[in-house]
Length: 428
Image 1 (cartoon, helix red, strand yellow):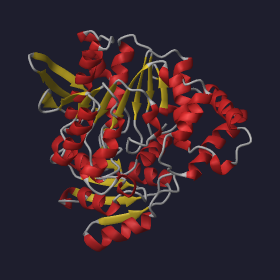
Image 2 (cartoon, rainbow, N blue to C red):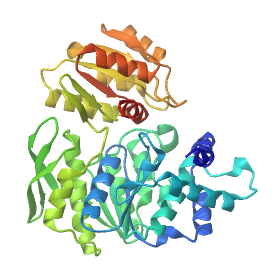
Image 3 (cartoon, rainbow, N blue to C red):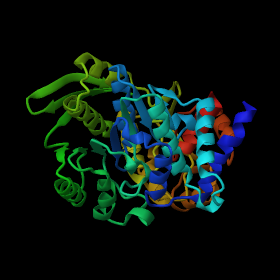
Image 4 (cartoon, rainbow, N blue to C red):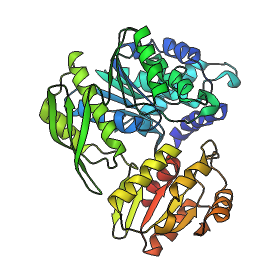
């Protein structure tokens, strides 16, 4: 295995080049690979929160239906290959190394500073791998934004837009109108668009872009809707309605009221894909919805005492998490283990997390395994200055987890998917 490491390290070093908006490098690399992304039906999933849950559930259902299905998501939790899944199995290290070597040959003697970014590179590798595996369909989670995201090279026939929030404003704009303009950039000519319920400014942008592209658009709350009928700490039950069609008593293990709209987007997408030649039997739809596994989305890993891991990493995500905790465990006191990245609105996240903190025993700050993490002492100082609550700093996630497990209290681990990945890796 050690012989594989230099190639993977090369891929990881490309992170140094950060975020570069534009599609030219991705298109040029794909052309060198023979334009593999044009060989399968593709679905793009954009938005601020819920993209991964929608993409994973849709891909799971399509795989159960017998279609050769690729899934591209980000970030990963433990192994980089989790981002590139085919029929629900990650690209293995040998396959990944072979793809990196192909890429290195194409780049040749090009100056290092002109290399593509990590995300551009992995996107090309994923699309080429899916072609090698003769995928029927690829479900692709858009990275940041949409219009200039590397994934937007896909000639998607179906675009899903989850709830849009105010995030990455330094790149995407400071208003819902500006951010929606970037997200709606994924809409292709003559395609089908499925959108969550949006702020009025955002929805106007999406509708106008769909009209310009002569795309059919279906909106949650107008064309389809769900009604939740039951929920617990590990499952939700709901009914789906679209005109005269209905699916009753569907189940999902993805917990939280916010997941209801996400699952509605999935069911509506399955209905639309049938018209595109990808029918799914009703029993397969029900089974797929009920059996999807998506770690770190209100992930109950221990029941007594309770330990929940959730990848909430922005204000909207923390708000959804806070609401789910109060709904599922209304009388339960919790402590929090948290680490946050520098490019997030961390002070807003903490204010939401600690709102009505009378049910909070303690908050522990640690440092996720990335140089993008906020110094946990800065987070601790902020909380100490505003709240009467026990605050502890344990910089190393391993030591922080040991502390959590020794307290015999109820805990929620949140703030960054990188931190969730660190914790899962340690627990494994």
